[in-house]
Image (cartoon, rainbow, N blue to C red; front, side):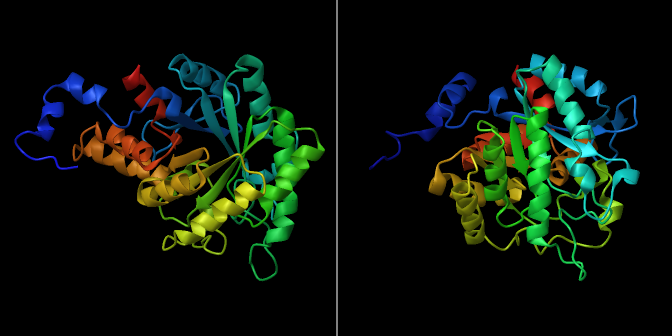
Length: 329
């Protein structure tokens, strides 16, 4: 190519808004958006989450109407996260595989009222443990990988039985995708999708989420560095993704999103499978806080989500899904 000025003026295609739109290389639509939702036991009205502007905790009953409003906006999928009564938490997360637990009941309720809504459910033990870790601790307070996987299998099975469309293991235990896939196949859940949080980093952007599910005090000053990935690494992420795909994952997730756009791009280019990204709580709250202060314009949310699409994301979990869908409609 030998394009030269003035025969080529790159500003020509920017000369009016319509030209900009029809020549856009990347487009964001409502179909790209997934709304994460927090469901809490023991409440009747929605509870605001202080560190996450415009985000609430909902009751099992109240979440139905919220889901209907999301469907009216064109949002086709949600991701459910439980806020568990502290009395039901223990060292091994037993409540996670109680078939009558909060999330199983919520899934059943939503599916009865809105069967076409895609329900993504989290598989991990941190909402259910008194120590706030994603797995079972050994005597040295190290997360026991293989014992944890046995519990995760049970958790995934009750969620599938409740009617979840997508099982999303976010725990980062080795071998859990293969174990869960085998368990699902053995119990005739052939079409239950596994969305693996394959490249989940040990990030400092998760703080508001932990407040939302009320696990911050459980974890205390601890960290998840022994199972979540180091922010220094990208090749390791590709190994994680490859192993999870080989074990039976149908789609993969990169989490967080904005600081890891290079990872999203690398995963999409190498594997060419459905690649999800999670704009996590810290990313969302950081942007919303700056917008509320007047330091950034509201349009920054759209700019960031377009960067996710440009990097290669097929779907985006974002707490701004409802707000963005309203703007796109």
